Image (cartoon, rainbow, N blue to C red; front, side, top):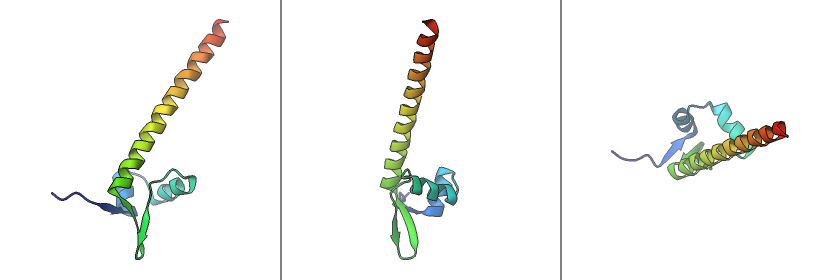
Length: 80
């Protein structure tokens, strides 16, 4: 089985279970995957998809750590 090297935006969105509108919102916020145009199409490479997934996982870890730190500090404040 041959590995896919790049995805059209619609394919990538289907893979990640998001709408095209959400894809372009992510791009606008600077949180989307790296993409490129070829001809009239826009594509996301498999490598860019992996980097995006790793970045999203790291952001989620940071978010959870921040929540834990916040809840711990609130607990300490209540104890004082």
